[in-house]
Image (cartoon, rainbow, N blue to C red; front, side, top):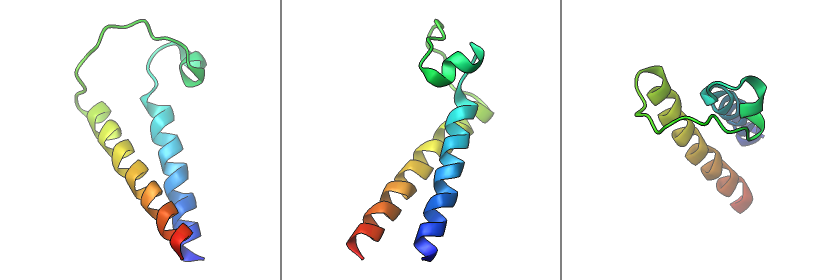
Length: 70
């Protein structure tokens, strides 16, 4: 039961981080719109959001596998 609650919290945080990473274009970026920009290096908060997204995705998959095996 506790794993399910943790997984829900992680998934909400993951959705929030992905939504915060969309740049420009308003809501169109959330639904696959192209920003049309050139590749830029990530700096500051953008880099923290990117790294946190990867970490939370790995945690989410790990929790899903753990829950599946038990």
